[in-house]
Image: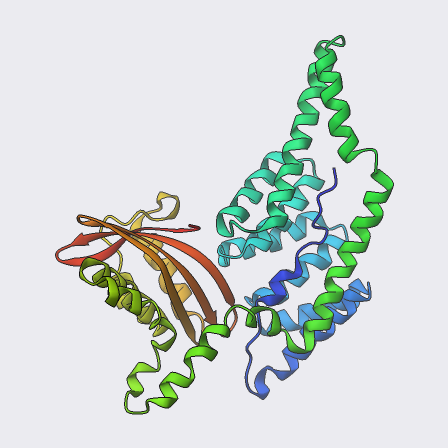
Length: 358
């Protein structure tokens, strides 16, 4: 079966390297050269460059992602799976590594794992169209296997014959053309990144800088309030809160304080925003979750989190807030929609559940 993303998504190229200073000039040059060589199909020289880059920046996501792509092109599937799995563990908010893991699992015939990876990609980024399409392909392939098995058990099952023929029409008939398209797309995607490589920021800039640009002048225009510069990107949601007043205003203030603590790398303040009975992802122990969050907050040199609240519903001592979150650090940029469930505990609104998606 052919899954579209060999267009192995280099959308993670939007995870921009915000390196500053001469100390990072050489590694960044290695990455740009690796991208260029990869786009030209020169896989081994590209691998040498990306390895040199990762030697200086071993946890950096863009270089690791490119290494995964190169390993995939080299047919080193198990090694590529290891790279993309590591990315999902270190950066679970990124959908592209899950998507590419699905492609690799499908190439091994492991459609159950491919399905699970795509479901995680969609959970992380519900509007990720490629993952939705690939998941449809996985279901179709699983259906094909089931119909084929049904015919093995009952050769006269005409219904199964018709259904199997329909599925094969999608995936088998245009086989040659599909292979050609896969090759074209796989190589066209890096070419796009190559075009963007000298200025990798443009793609994320379409989403993120729109907020800072609109608000950056505000702190400059009001120098009398220097302390307002840090939360400037988050002041927009405060307006609806003021208009709504009451508990909605208190919920908004709690969310903004949570984002400010995150931006300030104030681990204690960040963790204090969560309720004692917070539902940790996957039900892991609270201590393990706090340790992981502490590491992810302390690891980057800088963090900026901007939130724009889209809706708040309050019901007694419970509230549900849907917001748009923009996250920036010196190594990563992401944008996502989040739903927070909050509870009023001791007069304070605390986060009880946090999930990506509306």
